[in-house]
Length: 314
Image (cartoon, rainbow, N blue to C red; front, side, top):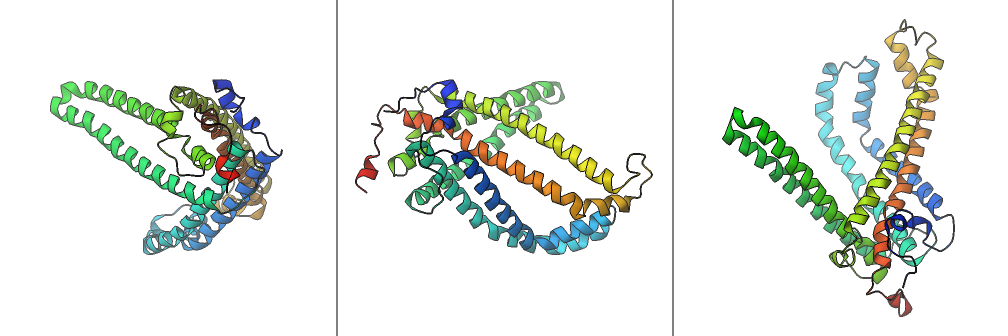
C-alpha cells in the first residue's frame, strides 16, 4: 500500500513523491520539446506551400486578396499532406504517456520505448477520443435548448433564454470536468495493472473527484501565470529585436517593408524560436505534473496491494 495518503496537497505535489531515479522531470520535458519540434518541422515542411503564401502576404503588407486564389488552390492538398504527421503525433503521445505513467506507478526513471504499455494506452486514448466526441455532441444540444426557448418566447423572453443558456453551458462544462476527473486515472490504472482499464477509474476516484478537479484548477492557474510571464517576455523580446534592426521603429517613421524584413530575418526568429522551445519545455513539465492527482488516486486504491503482481510473473 502506498504510504502517501490521498489529499489535496499531496495530489498537487505528487510529481515530487514518485520515488525512483532523480532528474526525471527535466529529461521528460527536454525530450518532449525536442521531439515536438521535429514533428512541427515535419508539419511545416509538408505544408510549406501554405506557409510560403503567408510569407508572401506578409511581404506584401498583408494583402490577402491578391493571394487568396493561390491559397484556395493548394490549401486542401497541403492540409491533407499535413495529416501525414498525425500518426507521429499519436506515437509521441503514446511513448511519453507510457514513460509518464510508469514513473508514477512504478517509480521508473526516464526511458522512452514502444511496448505493451504503449499499445494499451493507445486503446485508452481511443476511448478518450470517443468521450470528447460525445462532449461536442452534448455541447451542441446544450446550446440548442436555450435557442429553442428564445424562439418560443420571442423578444420578451430573450434575456431569460440568454441567462438560461449561460447557466446550462456553465453547468454542462462543470459536469464534464467532474466526469473527466472521475475517469482521469484510466491511464495510470492501465499501466499499473498491465491491462486496459478505463471505467474502473470511476470506482477508484469515488470521493476524490472534486479533489482532483480542484488540484487541476490550482495547477492550471499556476500554468497560466507562467505562460503570462513567458508571453510578456516574448513581447518584450520581439519589440527589442525589431527595435534593434529598425532604429526609427519607436517614432513611427519607419517603412512597412523594414518591419517585414526584420521579422523574417534570422536575428528575429532565431531568438523567438528559442523562446518557443521554452514554451514547449513548460508544456511538457505540466503534462507530467497534471497526471499526478489521478496517479495518486490509483496508487491509494484500497483494493490494490501496492505490488506489481503482473510484473512478478511476466
